[in-house]
Length: 140
View 1 (tube, rainbow, N blue to C red):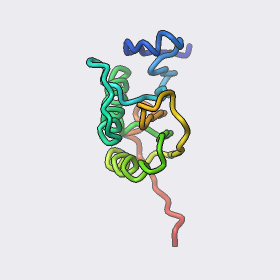
View 2 (tube, one colour):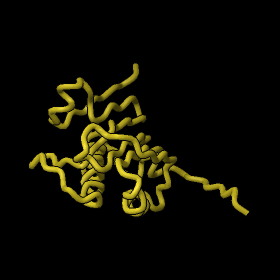
View 3 (cartoon, helix red, strand yellow):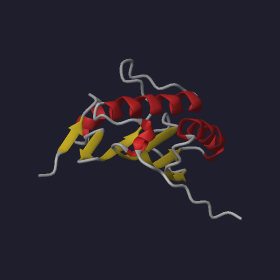
């Protein structure tokens, strides 16, 4: 039988909208779109770089709850409110995902509030960090 684990972080938004931060189906781990709100203080930094780093802290904490880590991420979807913030956010994402190299989509849609500058959604596969990875380059 398939094992499903649903992780809640205590966010009021998870309760209001009836969703889980993580749904793990066997080894597949789906992490909901995550903002840079500090889980204890509930505050959101005004700077895009601070929000991006908090987003990663929130995601990494959630992944640990299901015996997963950032290196297990195989796909990311990045949502940046202001196109001018793309270079800053992508530089930080590049640092965090260096060597992991997940498939990625980056877009600049309006987010749920103007206080959110960046949100990130990821899909991980438990154990991908220990897999034998073959990289193929199509560039000349």
